[in-house]
Picture (cartoon, each protein chain N blue to C red):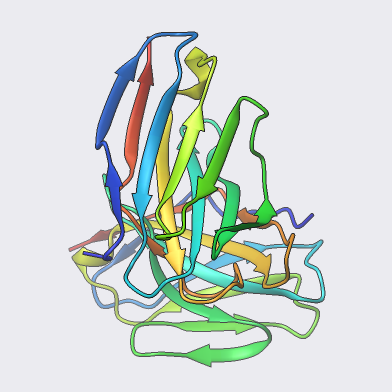
Length: 114
Length: 111
């Protein structure tokens, strides 16, 4: 158990819908990262937040947004969903602000768009 | 932007040493190289990290040549439980730094 929690574990929705994925980092960790893992694209870095502020942005679509709240939990919002958004979404956390440091990954949320 | 390339799969036998190489020709000066292990239906788990030369911990070694355009993860004496997918990650610690994963190497350890 990494100490990172993600909810929900599974999510099934329809095209065009909007969903919110939630992540609670390890106690004491200030950075949260979001990743998408799909069969054709592999593991893709989406975005990083550090202590409530956006720190780095990866291949995140404009239809996706994220934020980190004062209690350090984070939410990833996916809107106007398409079939291709079906994937595993991982959240990770780390103590410091650097993305190259050791990250602790949650169990993931499996999103299925029908 | 560092593009990272790994072999898709490798086979080994219990007790052997396994070396998995990652190619990252466009690595930036402030980028580090990190390796993760992933089992099915789980999130990746940190193995080792380095910047240059050699790093060793209790489970693996990481070799990075002087030009830093590649790196090799070395797993000594693998066991069946090392069967997993191994990913290299290239990225820096500065604000705005991109993090780029390789495509992953599926290691199968046979008895």
